[in-house]
Length: 236
Ligand SMILES: Nc1ncnc2c1ncn2[C@@H]1O[C@H](COP(=O)(O)OP(=O)(O)O)[C@@H](O)[C@H]1O
Ligand SMILES: [Mg+2]
View 1 (cartoon, rainbow, N blue to C red):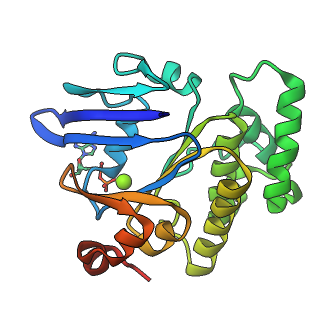
View 2 (spheres, rainbow, N blue to C red):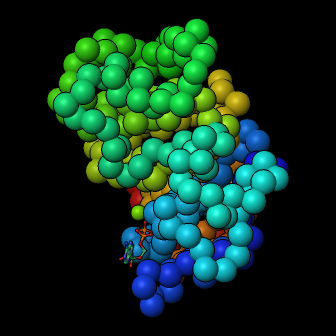
């Protein structure tokens, strides 16, 4: 098992947020967490990478208890995140932004090779390699955020609402790339979404989150047929 959350509780000040969240991600797995606005999805990702600390429960990554570790140590263990707003450096070039994704990589040869692989997946970024990240379109910025995460050579990538704020054609493009990563790379994916249709198109299974709790889980097919998913999250 890659990642395991066991009965995790968090709060913001006195306000409870995650309430007993348990989930597992296996190596090479692709899973989603579906939930509406304010359900606690971003909080869940922040908790996994140690920005938010649980007051109860624990997290383990490849068998190691990562609950007390600072964020940068958790990321060094092999978890990358694509935040909702890509978190890029707008004044730096596409190339420099990619380089920063691999900040901890010491093997320059492996890095160059990985960059080639990533640019093969994202030909649009290759064309714009010297362009300032801030001048990319919304879809291209999402691509750069994902490409940068891959360059860190993680075993697990967390993606916070990759479809958010994108026109439908771009959503399809971004999800096309996510599908490609899933098929070509041995990287596990945990995708947070309100757009259940898109997420269920690429993942194998998932969870439903409401008000800080996991209220359901199942395979892609089970979730597609789930009444809560059908009534609330099947945005088209
Ligand atoms: N730093 C924070 N301080 C206080 N409340 C927060 C903080 N971050 C998020 N919240 C609150 O926690 C709830 C869940 O937020 P979030 O995890 O961002 O939900 P989601 O990503 O599912 O939309 C929201 O009600 C939000 O206002
Ligand atoms: Mg969010």
